[in-house]
Length: 619
Image (cartoon, rainbow, N blue to C red):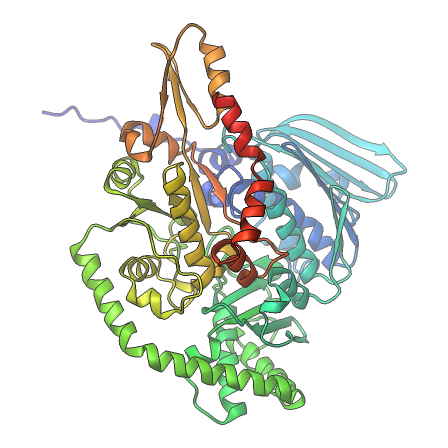
């Protein structure tokens, strides 16, 4: 008979605020990560501190914010009103404490939960806050949320405002590093949404005069735009839109009170609906919604009283009400778009004609593809039932009710041995595996028809659920996991081409990665080191001394599941696939995948130095 487990008063335990945050950080900042993804925790920490500085600007003070990141140390300095000096410690260390609960001071604040800087404090090995106002300053220092030093009122000549310095805890954010591209994207979003605000990052100034219009121009090559951006502004709302010449699906950037709602929500759904309704009425034709929205690139920003989000990281708006006596979110956006967009199209007949031609062309293509799309969907459904190409996970990206939804990952592998190793070592809750059969087709220059006709592409599209855009994307991270040899590199290139050609928003929104796996294993009887480069291998040899056993991994299939668990678990290394903003997607594909052999040969020769270095080290 099994012994009964005792359950007494001794089993009941209360965690204080910092212990709870450190034990369950995902509840407060989403996923952890190492900085390779734009939604990794270290960027959420930066955002939480910045949000307070942005609120000061919104309240009419502090037109400049200075941000510095040197190594792992982050400094954010604003010139707002400064935290009330007697509350400097409480504001960053007592839950549910902050000025945003007083709606008189913060009517449409970025954050309203009183958690932000407390989470940063608890998850940092060093955290310092300093406030200056009325010629006096006060500061406090913490370690993992514990107060270590406090300086009370001091006379000072420094300008008023708040300065926060922190170093995220490496025990929680393992092997992390800040990628400037992601920080800059975050800062640019702030200036797009706050005209008149200047953010200085490591000495570089960021400023926007045209709001969401600048956002669309910065994120898309102008040559890819079918017509000049339509930019409309009103009270508590701003929208911008155009259509792409090259991409097939929809792309949206949406914001609520300055928050980048990457998973949309009620405001984004209302915007999509309003565009279709207005265009149908303007042209007097009941266009299919998919034809109107095909290739659309849009952005919307609204301000809502006390918004309700579907997760702590505020990636999806759940609010249906604008607040303040205004109509619902849906009605407010519909009325605004109906009036402003209709007026714009009446005044800009050339753009109206261009848009109409685009919709009619989309309608023609949809009808031509309708039969094959149905067959392809039927094949995908049968394939999901009968084959083993997709080993799915239990949690998916759209489920914001689940804490781990941001960690959902699809590994795209080639070959049974590689997919077998990953399948056996994966986290079945959040990690799925899609197995390719040989090299995928080179899709450069082909039409969307090939996605439905080609079995591999059709099943991959169905697995990701991206046929009609990213709204239904099932995995936050799409990871290409191939061997680090010539064939593996070629497969990577062909898959990247597939996404660039048909689903560029997957890359634009930071969802596509390359899995880094070790090239060598260096071990003796006591220690094992996995090395990702010749330099790491040599360092491991020097550390172990003697004559350690050295294994060169030739492919993913050679790595046992017991070892693979290290490379796709907490220590996973991902290299994000990013677009070169200087080239249009069409130019990029033409250069790398087109028939411009001399130009490409010249590029390879001029960039051969890295490979030469590797060859030299091997010798």
